[in-house]
Image (cartoon, rainbow, N blue to C red):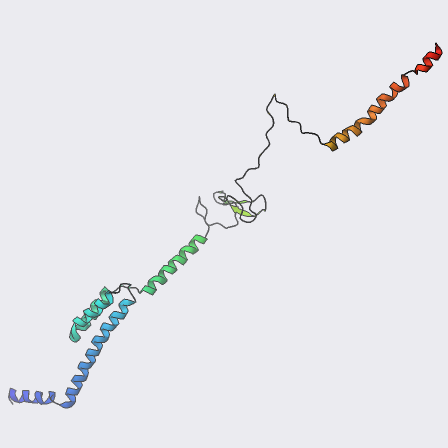
Length: 213
Protein backbone atom coordinates (compact mmCIF):
# COMPACT_ATOMS: atom_id res chain seq x y z
CA UNK A 1 0.00 0.00 0.00
CA UNK A 2 1.60 3.24 -1.14
CA UNK A 3 1.16 6.82 0.09
CA UNK A 4 -1.29 7.61 -2.69
CA UNK A 5 -3.80 5.16 -1.30
CA UNK A 6 -3.35 6.71 2.16
CA UNK A 7 -4.00 10.22 0.87
CA UNK A 8 -7.05 9.00 -1.04
CA UNK A 9 -8.47 7.40 2.12
CA UNK A 10 -7.89 10.55 4.17
CA UNK A 11 -9.48 12.67 1.42
CA UNK A 12 -12.53 10.47 1.33
CA UNK A 13 -12.80 10.72 5.13
CA UNK A 14 -12.76 14.53 5.13
CA UNK A 15 -15.17 14.65 2.18
CA UNK A 16 -17.79 12.92 4.26
CA UNK A 17 -20.83 15.30 4.43
CA UNK A 18 -21.45 14.64 8.11
CA UNK A 19 -17.84 15.42 8.97
CA UNK A 20 -17.92 18.60 6.94
CA UNK A 21 -21.13 19.63 8.73
CA UNK A 22 -19.41 19.04 12.05
CA UNK A 23 -16.45 21.20 11.03
CA UNK A 24 -18.77 24.00 9.96
CA UNK A 25 -20.65 23.83 13.26
CA UNK A 26 -17.37 23.90 15.17
CA UNK A 27 -16.19 26.92 13.18
CA UNK A 28 -19.46 28.73 13.83
CA UNK A 29 -19.12 27.88 17.53
CA UNK A 30 -15.63 29.40 17.70
CA UNK A 31 -16.81 32.52 15.89
CA UNK A 32 -19.69 32.93 18.34
CA UNK A 33 -17.36 32.44 21.30
CA UNK A 34 -14.93 34.94 19.77
CA UNK A 35 -17.59 37.65 19.38
CA UNK A 36 -19.11 36.85 22.76
CA UNK A 37 -15.70 37.24 24.40
CA UNK A 38 -15.30 40.66 22.81
CA UNK A 39 -18.76 41.70 24.06
CA UNK A 40 -17.98 40.30 27.53
CA UNK A 41 -14.76 42.32 27.69
CA UNK A 42 -16.69 45.44 26.63
CA UNK A 43 -19.39 45.01 29.32
CA UNK A 44 -16.94 43.94 32.00
CA UNK A 45 -14.73 46.98 31.53
CA UNK A 46 -17.75 49.28 31.62
CA UNK A 47 -18.40 48.04 35.16
CA UNK A 48 -14.77 48.55 36.19
CA UNK A 49 -13.94 52.00 34.85
CA UNK A 50 -15.65 55.32 34.24
CA UNK A 51 -13.70 55.89 31.00
CA UNK A 52 -15.99 55.60 27.97
CA UNK A 53 -13.22 54.66 25.48
CA UNK A 54 -11.47 51.79 27.26
CA UNK A 55 -14.35 49.26 26.86
CA UNK A 56 -14.25 49.69 23.06
CA UNK A 57 -10.47 49.23 23.06
CA UNK A 58 -10.76 45.99 25.05
CA UNK A 59 -13.37 44.58 22.63
CA UNK A 60 -11.28 45.60 19.63
CA UNK A 61 -8.19 43.91 21.09
CA UNK A 62 -10.02 40.57 21.38
CA UNK A 63 -11.44 40.89 17.88
CA UNK A 64 -7.97 41.56 16.44
CA UNK A 65 -6.73 38.29 17.91
CA UNK A 66 -9.05 36.48 15.43
CA UNK A 67 -11.12 33.40 16.30
CA UNK A 68 -7.96 31.31 16.43
CA UNK A 69 -6.06 33.31 19.07
CA UNK A 70 -8.87 35.14 20.83
CA UNK A 71 -8.28 33.04 23.96
CA UNK A 72 -4.86 34.67 24.23
CA UNK A 73 -6.56 38.10 24.02
CA UNK A 74 -8.96 37.11 26.82
CA UNK A 75 -6.02 36.09 29.02
CA UNK A 76 -4.25 39.39 28.34
CA UNK A 77 -7.42 41.32 29.13
CA UNK A 78 -7.92 39.52 32.44
CA UNK A 79 -4.36 40.43 33.43
CA UNK A 80 -4.53 44.15 32.63
CA UNK A 81 -8.13 44.90 33.67
CA UNK A 82 -8.86 46.71 36.98
CA UNK A 83 -9.23 44.32 39.89
CA UNK A 84 -12.35 45.93 41.40
CA UNK A 85 -15.60 47.07 39.91
CA UNK A 86 -16.91 50.57 40.44
CA UNK A 87 -19.66 49.32 42.75
CA UNK A 88 -17.17 47.27 44.78
CA UNK A 89 -14.86 50.29 45.08
CA UNK A 90 -17.73 52.49 46.26
CA UNK A 91 -18.83 49.84 48.75
CA UNK A 92 -15.29 49.55 50.10
CA UNK A 93 -15.07 53.34 50.51
CA UNK A 94 -18.39 53.37 52.36
CA UNK A 95 -17.19 50.61 54.66
CA UNK A 96 -14.00 52.53 55.38
CA UNK A 97 -15.94 55.73 56.11
CA UNK A 98 -18.30 53.85 58.41
CA UNK A 99 -15.34 52.36 60.25
CA UNK A 100 -13.73 55.79 60.62
CA UNK A 101 -17.02 57.19 61.93
CA UNK A 102 -17.20 54.43 64.54
CA UNK A 103 -13.62 55.14 65.56
CA UNK A 104 -14.40 58.85 65.93
CA UNK A 105 -17.40 58.05 68.15
CA UNK A 106 -15.11 56.29 70.63
CA UNK A 107 -14.01 58.99 73.07
CA UNK A 108 -10.42 59.00 74.26
CA UNK A 109 -8.49 61.13 76.70
CA UNK A 110 -6.57 63.90 74.88
CA UNK A 111 -3.56 63.40 77.17
CA UNK A 112 -3.09 59.66 77.74
CA UNK A 113 -5.22 58.46 74.76
CA UNK A 114 -7.05 55.98 76.98
CA UNK A 115 -10.66 55.13 76.21
CA UNK A 116 -13.08 57.20 78.30
CA UNK A 117 -16.82 57.47 78.88
CA UNK A 118 -18.83 60.42 77.61
CA UNK A 119 -20.18 61.16 81.11
CA UNK A 120 -16.80 61.25 82.84
CA UNK A 121 -15.63 64.61 84.17
CA UNK A 122 -11.99 63.68 84.86
CA UNK A 123 -9.82 60.98 83.32
CA UNK A 124 -9.09 58.40 86.05
CA UNK A 125 -5.66 57.66 84.57
CA UNK A 126 -4.02 61.05 84.07
CA UNK A 127 -6.54 63.31 85.88
CA UNK A 128 -7.19 65.40 82.78
CA UNK A 129 -10.46 67.34 82.88
CA UNK A 130 -12.81 65.97 80.22
CA UNK A 131 -16.09 67.77 80.95
CA UNK A 132 -17.51 70.35 83.29
CA UNK A 133 -20.88 70.91 84.91
CA UNK A 134 -23.03 73.82 83.83
CA UNK A 135 -23.64 76.03 86.89
CA UNK A 136 -27.11 76.92 85.62
CA UNK A 137 -28.73 73.58 84.66
CA UNK A 138 -26.26 71.07 86.12
CA UNK A 139 -25.69 69.12 82.91
CA UNK A 140 -22.33 68.06 81.51
CA UNK A 141 -20.78 70.33 78.90
CA UNK A 142 -17.47 70.25 77.07
CA UNK A 143 -14.49 72.12 78.38
CA UNK A 144 -14.21 74.04 75.11
CA UNK A 145 -17.89 75.05 74.91
CA UNK A 146 -18.55 78.80 75.06
CA UNK A 147 -22.16 78.29 76.18
CA UNK A 148 -24.42 75.50 77.43
CA UNK A 149 -26.33 73.72 74.66
CA UNK A 150 -29.23 72.87 77.01
CA UNK A 151 -29.95 76.08 78.90
CA UNK A 152 -28.01 78.65 76.86
CA UNK A 153 -25.77 79.76 79.72
CA UNK A 154 -22.98 81.93 78.32
CA UNK A 155 -19.71 80.95 79.98
CA UNK A 156 -17.67 83.78 78.45
CA UNK A 157 -19.94 86.64 79.58
CA UNK A 158 -18.94 87.80 83.06
CA UNK A 159 -21.38 89.49 85.49
CA UNK A 160 -20.26 93.12 85.96
CA UNK A 161 -19.23 93.95 89.54
CA UNK A 162 -20.10 97.46 90.77
CA UNK A 163 -16.89 99.22 91.67
CA UNK A 164 -16.58 101.07 94.96
CA UNK A 165 -15.92 104.84 94.85
CA UNK A 166 -12.26 105.83 95.07
CA UNK A 167 -10.81 106.93 98.37
CA UNK A 168 -11.33 110.60 99.18
CA UNK A 169 -14.47 110.92 97.10
CA UNK A 170 -17.90 110.90 98.78
CA UNK A 171 -20.21 108.13 97.80
CA UNK A 172 -23.16 109.14 95.69
CA UNK A 173 -26.32 109.54 97.73
CA UNK A 174 -29.44 108.31 96.09
CA UNK A 175 -32.28 110.86 95.98
CA UNK A 176 -34.97 110.26 98.51
CA UNK A 177 -38.43 109.63 97.30
CA UNK A 178 -41.55 111.32 98.58
CA UNK A 179 -42.59 108.17 100.46
CA UNK A 180 -39.24 108.06 102.24
CA UNK A 181 -39.51 111.76 103.18
CA UNK A 182 -43.05 111.26 104.53
CA UNK A 183 -41.91 108.31 106.62
CA UNK A 184 -39.03 110.32 108.07
CA UNK A 185 -41.38 113.18 108.94
CA UNK A 186 -43.79 110.83 110.72
CA UNK A 187 -40.90 109.30 112.62
CA UNK A 188 -39.54 112.67 113.68
CA UNK A 189 -42.95 114.32 114.57
CA UNK A 190 -43.35 112.77 118.10
CA UNK A 191 -39.94 114.02 119.18
CA UNK A 192 -40.75 117.49 117.88
CA UNK A 193 -44.05 117.51 119.78
CA UNK A 194 -42.32 116.34 122.96
CA UNK A 195 -39.65 118.99 122.63
CA UNK A 196 -42.19 121.76 122.10
CA UNK A 197 -44.47 120.81 125.01
CA UNK A 198 -42.09 121.81 127.85
CA UNK A 199 -41.43 125.14 126.26
CA UNK A 200 -45.19 125.87 126.31
CA UNK A 201 -45.46 124.84 129.92
CA UNK A 202 -42.50 126.97 131.08
CA UNK A 203 -43.66 130.12 129.29
CA UNK A 204 -45.52 132.69 131.48
CA UNK A 205 -48.74 134.34 130.50
CA UNK A 206 -48.30 138.10 129.94
CA UNK A 207 -51.63 138.86 131.70
CA UNK A 208 -50.49 137.02 134.84
CA UNK A 209 -47.31 139.02 134.90
CA UNK A 210 -49.27 142.32 134.76
CA UNK A 211 -51.60 141.22 137.55
CA UNK A 212 -48.74 140.41 139.89
CA UNK A 213 -47.25 143.82 139.37
